[in-house]
Length: 170
Image (spheres, rainbow, N blue to C red):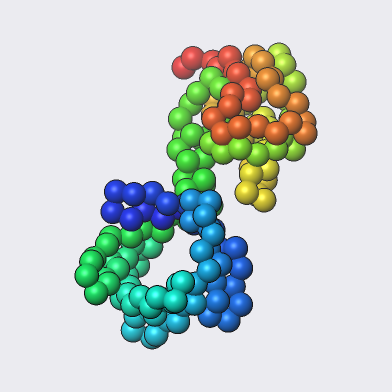
């Protein structure tokens, strides 16, 4: 997941958790910590023999927090990667475009159309698996498939052009 700490962005991954012992990867570097959470949002963290205390105050019902320590205060937002991906996909699907791209890397599962084929708005053009979810990319308008630039089984990069279209102009 992605964490925004004031103006800094960190990539954080939970590697393992056993009781209070937690192994986190922060921007690729592993940290072993002992974390104890209290009901009021206070937490105690032990790392490398040092003790840290923090208070987490949730802002509204979002994933935004104010974190207070003995000497500092930080604004933190947890950006759920899956939600971010779905938001990016929805934004891409809402715009009529003459190309199909995936906002994230993944694997092409199926391509139920062929070059030159007529398509209607809403037709599934390609199925991509990303983050263990299969996503159907559909035509935003009527038209024809111009070029298919990938094949089933291909691993793709984020924002890679997968299919180009020749859309009918209204």
